[in-house]
Image (cartoon, rainbow, N blue to C red; front, side, top):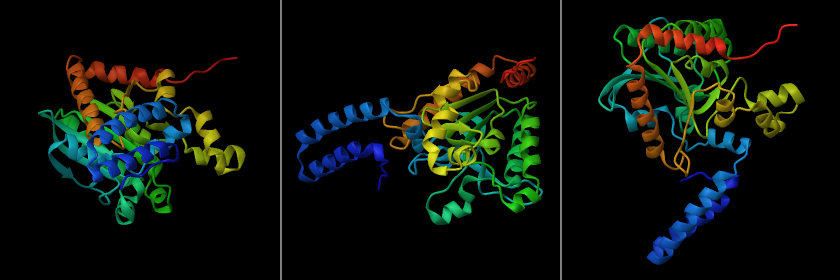
Length: 312
């Protein structure tokens, strides 16, 4: 059953009317209602505020990494383990083909339903998850296989055992090693890009965001708790933090915004998957024209150009 957010009530009402008309076999009414639904969706989604976009990024029906694996990756082969501690189920690593091109796909998986959410640790990787991602990325470099990173996490797991096993070092190691990795790499924020846990997969030749995704150094709830001592001010924090794809693109912190289907990725998973697939294949064609050394130089220059400072 589809999940509707508060601002989607008018859409739900029309969906219900269409379902009832189909049950009655009233095809003329279905046709009229579907036209009205299209207009209503366009109206609702053209006027979203930042907090509503955050809600869409966290939508329970939004496609996760496993959905994209099923939709765009042919002959998918799951790769396991960091070769040091264990296999982290919150971090998925696959080898397969996209449009006939051999690729490595690495992404975080949140999980659906209580059992799967616990199995995937709500999409929050432990250090071994980041070490697994780095191991696979180095393998990709060795065999010159392009990498597609799919970012979707509230953040790296903050528990005691994660700190004991070197969470911050694992993330920092990824940032350091990936900046010099000579294979082609594209990072796509597909939902929620939270803190360093997301950034650990965000060092690439290009980093792009789905239209209704977010990327932030801290969650709006955490920001509100720190600044105003009130987690309920998350809506104000979301607006102040500038974490939407449009804001980050304007600030030149990301390279592109991938336009989702008009109804949103949560209502059209296949359409969203095709957007990523097409962009990735065009990205490969573009990167094929640049030498590995030049790609690394551009990547490092881009990272070093981020931010501003003033000397007094």
